[in-house]
Length: 279
Image (tube, rainbow, N blue to C red; front, top):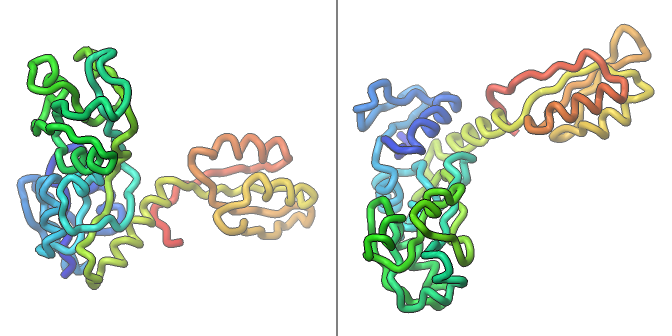
């Protein structure tokens, strides 16, 4: 059986479980369960702390897992990223007291608080900067005010939390992170199926099916407006002057494409959700 590590709690847990369910796998019913088997699909799920998943996968104890790219890099394990999964986005930046720092080189010799010493340390070393890292498990933004550090390296969304702590962002982006599928580097049976299924879920979330009727004389303009993933499906109608078209388009473009098709002369424009896909 393919052994899969899944976050047992935190921001990645619920979305990862939902994605696996949409991919056709049967996960745990009780949130307290740490292990469950899905014999129909030939997999076992192990529910672990997100920070530990890369260590288990990298050691070969488990075959694949879902975790954050930040946690993977911070772990220093031998696990490798297989594919991004399109959720759990985060950005890591440096921050310090207003006006105290302006560029990365200003961190030379100072104390930097972070919950990701492996990730931040590797970044600083790669840029030739030596700083003293202060490891904290949370509330990193308070480190400067409490005198534990001179600057911080933390996840940034809008930056409002840092500003409330009297800090401002400076220097380059440390990392753009998201949830990723990771592996141990060993080709395990079922791993490719898992990847294809998860990619199918991503396609289903990002695309929709668009059906419409259009006069034959406007077909070229219509298919130019919505060329589809590969090529539109065009079918004749009872009226020889009209055809029916089916095409897959990005969900975010849906209303703009519908407006353009209507202006071209298309009618009976319908959108359908995609529940699963293999491309």
